Amino acid sequence: EAGVTQFPSHSVIEKGQTVTLRCDPISGHDNLYWYRRVMGKEIKFLLHFVKESKQDESGMPNNRFLAERTGGTYSTLKVQPAELEDSGVYFCASSPFRGVTDTQYFGPGTRLTVL
Amino acid sequence: AQSVTQLGSHVSVSEGALVLLRCNYSSSVPPYLFWYVQYPNQGLQLLLKYTSAATLVKGINGFEAEFKKSETSFHLTKPSAHMSDAAEYFCAARVGSSNTGKLIFGQGTTLQVKP
Image (cartoon, rainbow over all chains, first blue to last red; front, side, top):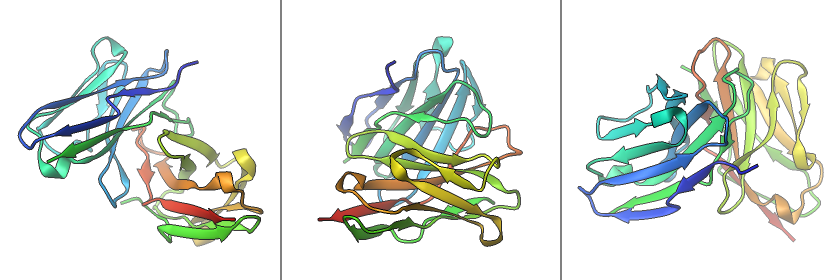
């Protein structure tokens, strides 16, 4: 069974440009999560999809970030326009259920550098 | 507000020595707790999780953790370190009463194993 995949693995862009990150969850997992780790800080929650619906987007930093999950399969996270403070590693995770003890399976992350 | 604290951003042990990685949580409601490990260029992998069934939890690769409510701790241990244990370790929590699936992470601890 394929794990969670993320594309690209690295992205280097200039301030003001747009970047789109993609996450493919494990097949059949209705729950999809985005997290971000800024250098030197802890991993922080961004948002949670259940199928195509946003269950919780309380962690989205501002309206420059737009997450979508059309059809309830893969998800994209767009940053437009990118700022320097958006640099970090963006993780995606998925789980089949949303019970409090259910394991979230993480992808390898996308390292975003904004110059 | 719930928080997770990992004491020590870097821990160094000799091969064969005891591994002790510390994690404390702050919550008005006893949380569900997880330890994840991240090897270079890989996603986070679940080591073990506390689900309230037992306070001593055994995980993969010989790791275990003990939930101590009186100390609000969930420290990770392994009796004998192996070179392959070198990685970054994350403690995370979820609050049982929440409908959201979000995990709250500690800052991470990088484990170095010296030959």
